[in-house]
Image (cartoon, rainbow, N blue to C red; front, top):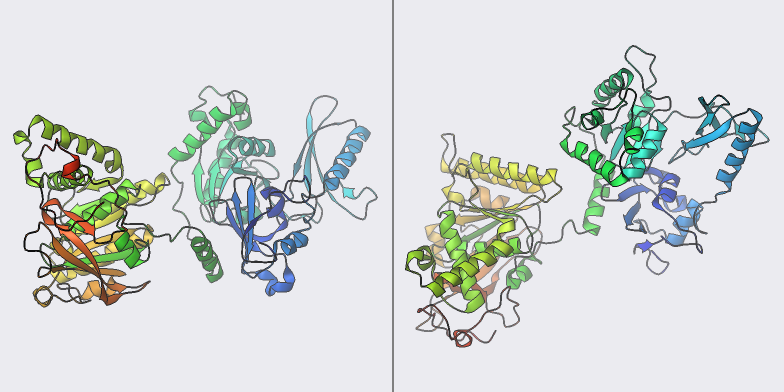
Length: 632
């Protein structure tokens, strides 16, 4: 942000001369930090003069993009004001404090015949009391630990005690992270963080064995509330007992996983730990081992439900809309995208209605195949046609769009009649489909039946599988709704209601789109007018749909001899944008080819069309009669 525009995020990775500010410098200095995933955090803005009640609602948005840190205060505080409040205007934090502590510890070690080995700072976030755990080695080579904290009453500025310090975990990384490795000691925490970049934590006094005095404190449990916790233990009875106990206790507040290193390191010696294992492998090898254990681990519990405040939910919303969370999914047909606001909106139920033969399936398959070509995972359930029939229509359309040649779906299905040249053209179209569409497109997945319960099971399984790999849930088409059945003996109206509820819940839960084709009533077919209530038995549909489209054939307009019909599309409902029964969007519909072409000279088609004149070796003897098609 700048003084000219306080609402524009600005990088502050480089500030104050040559000093580099890192995310690790900023987060510990902020209050009320909450991780939002994807290297994003919300926190209370430190500019108290602009905020009420200490900004408990978290107005400051922090984003890490590579080596850049973006700050955005929704109340309007400028970058300079935020940095001033953090004491960081001149660059990275002052290192004199660290130097003073190290000098004191060196003096202490010399006075007591010790060798300073390692310092483990317990200062982060709200904990800024200077508490540090220090590892020394005595003259006999034995390790010993001491605590040090800030103490302004002492001449040195430090005391060798924990008096007055609040209990907390040792953390290597950011405590704001949603996922944390829990290990037995600080050395192991540093090892895991160094190798994976993930946050790792340990209790101040190590592991607690079965029957031993407890070393785990309630404050530690509170710090891990709502997080994913991955437990790593040492190869001994104390470590195993500690892992079991912590998994049990944390299950009430966190999602817990136990990662057994020793299923991989089967000949590990007694008391071996993750740091010992790391010395036997390169960092990349060790990271692969840890990540594989993470991916293969099953949770020890059902994740606890953590109550979210309205302010937290608003923070999530603000982050989503300032990113691309609600960026429309383009259909590939610019005319349609312009009519509905740029594309299909996530978390919505879309309805398309038309009379028989108007091209509902043709238009929808065109949309879905283009979206699949653009990388959007798609599931298409057609309850009228087989997968092979849908493939034939797709290849017919591809051949025509790429070569200008015509081979109708029925001809493609009768491959035994093909000439060699025809066969090669069909195979070329099929290869193009396999390379460009098939990776993200599934027609009538295996196990598909017409039962709504079956379809809901399949799409949920697909969505959960995608979520496990971090991929988006597929968008879904039901073609068409009135052919759905149920395992239960219920009437058609009840089946529609259950379908709408289940499909809309899927779209909301998995942040995706469900596109449904519906049958129109006879009255709507005869009226030739666009209407929100044109669907058959649609009392549940017209109220539940977020976007409703309607196709009307204009059979009276055009030329006496043509291979297409003019078809008009209307947006009869748009819950999040404009709808108009008077504005129409016109297409040419080539029924035999299952092809829609927007009547728009500026339309950029997804494939190049080659006219027959450009293709003297056209292997197909049937050509559509082209009337006023214009140049492409």
